Image 1: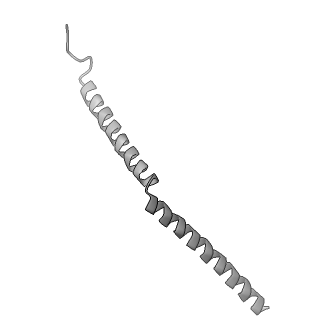
Image 2: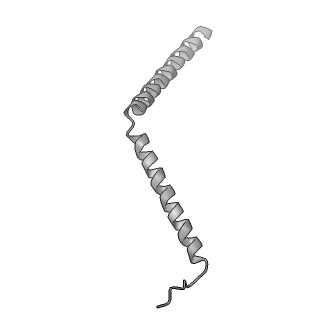
Image 3: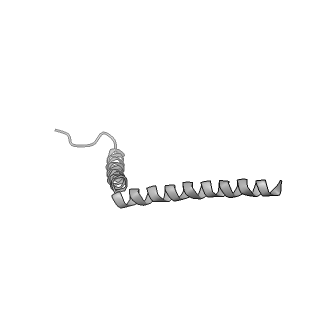
Length: 70
């Protein structure tokens, strides 16, 4: 039985495929941790709420300023 590979580059190609697969698996694990981190999700929700409240306050101040200029 012949164990010689068909192409000398096949070893390099398989190495790249394994590395890419491992990198993809690491990315998936990090993404899962990020998506299920409760404190992080609650903090982001509070930040969005604060930003929305600030935007509404700026809009009210702008409307009041336009009324006083007239």
